[in-house]
Image 1: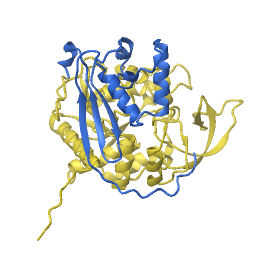
Image 2: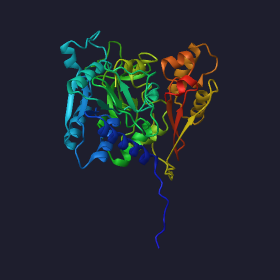
Image 3: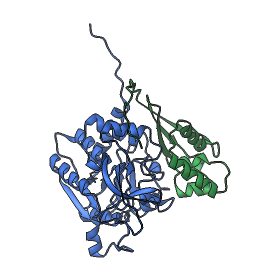
Image 4: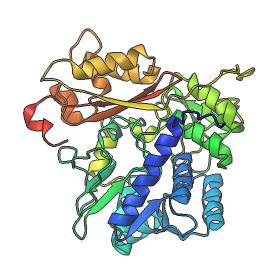
Length: 304
Length: 112
């Protein structure tokens, strides 16, 4: 006599199913989508969801990375390795090429290239004619992202209009657009940082080493730590310290700060994330701190 | 930050996920209620609280305006209204919650 046990869906199963559904919707509704893959933890989770959604077939979209030229070497190597393992097409477009073309002009040599990625992204969208870009942004990351639909419409200039978003009822998504317009899709919108790490643990996903505790030379500035690299050298008067740190979030070298940590395994990172008192992008992303509305502003200019 | 050792073994019950939203008329206090709920469930981390304290003071309020936790658009914060739905998350350890904070204005309600 078999005993029937009640099958309950864990929250990760629910979130994963939602992500799979969204990716399949994009494949069904859009003619030329692309998945933005940076090698960071969110896009690594998205690749796993894409595998579950489409394997044994190939992904119905290529992977793309907008490289600022200032990314951590470990993350770039990981990105290339992962794309090769999956045997999927990886397109890389560089902000430095836009700078050479003259479409991106930096105010100074040390200026962060983070927001200029929007220009390169829009150029790549035009080059390949992509009508949808799937990205790994989450609503809990930032207050402007909390306001964005899962299928976020962008006009022909790539601009986000927060006052003109489409209704999203239950799981009905509208990806219709005219030529030149674009839809940004965020399958892991409802995931929190904690969910991402739990998923990484459950699926045994490999990550770039900088997410785990390691020794690094840093300088303390503005209440946070900045890594000492060729891109961000120490200024005169800075005291260089060698500290055990890890990166909670990975932008590029010029805008990402590590946090002090001893967590060198996923289990320890989960324990740390559960007891943290600072948000993931709070003190660690300098690109979010330019103004109170910096993310909203960047999105209105075409940022993903 | 000290090393996390001896992670306690806790039996995890995962009751899944619950989504709920706020409904009500203008200025009923929907966003503020959600802000307070997030505060009470210790979902609000130190830097976010500090940021909204700063913004509240800048707007001339004595107490922290908890509706700033959901009203993230610049236009919303300036006018003190909710223009579009905001999604916030918290977990109690056994269940994950997704909150949708809706606008109350009749003219805006139709679009989401």
